Length: 379
Image 1 (cartoon, rainbow, N blue to C red):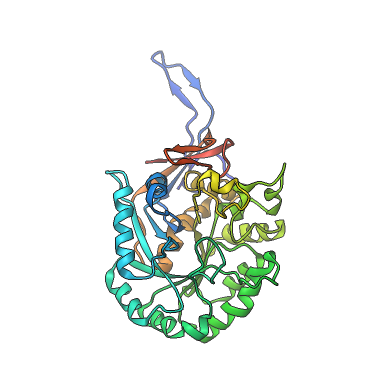
Image 2 (cartoon, one colour):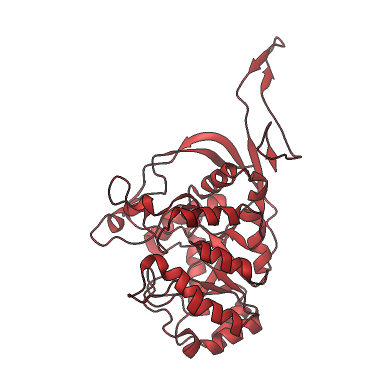
């Protein structure tokens, strides 16, 4: 719901507050306020880490999101249902006492994952998807899959039977393939054959970065092929990596792409298509692990994600499409109920902290020190 006086596109839920009356009945004019009232969003791609990092970052996501699909790429990875249940308990203990945040767990697919483990995962009621990391593709992916069709086909077939989605980090790891082409090559050599072989497998292409991924997702059958989209891939292109020098806090995987790809993703997401939904890929690392000779990939955006998504949709003249992207498309794809609680976004300037400091070090958020125009608060 949008409450305001004027929008780029009409809305039948408009509200404008511009005057108040003092005790003498005189008008006091103030600047107009815009509000967005949204069904509470979910984050369908989130890294919460473990240990001290988990304790530090979990409250940031819990402040804004009702649920989150939690990535399993810990050390060691979450490869079994038993490990997923234990990790879930750790997350719940890290949340504020009054939090209603629900972690939705995932399994880390390996060459040795068994069909029986998929059955156990479905019966557990806490595991909602399986994550495919090509071995060596990103952070803590060294235990990932080396031969999807040769070693994982029985597991994929069981996932079809159990209606268990496959979440895909869509990049090849062949060192002869240019880093900016790895998503497209993965689509051509892995995803297209996978969809053709198992058309009833539900697949989410995570954190898409190219117009090729947009076209691929739009070509699939609705309800079986979808994509998550991050704030960074909607707002930044690869120039952000080099402006004013090398920028480690803009480095993520898949790496940022050309402006033409960013524009294609914005157009897809703001079109109202049900195939795209919110997935922050918020990935915290300590500052010293980002600002070092071999910096880690990952952008920490949990505290600012909703503000940035609102910025994207406002600039596209599509604020009326924001709620479906943040709050409806994800649960509908997963077959889960939509949230019933609400959250407000107020059109008011606020400054992103330069850093978040903890006993173990600092975490630098996306857009650190910059001023944003939308601020979340509960209604």
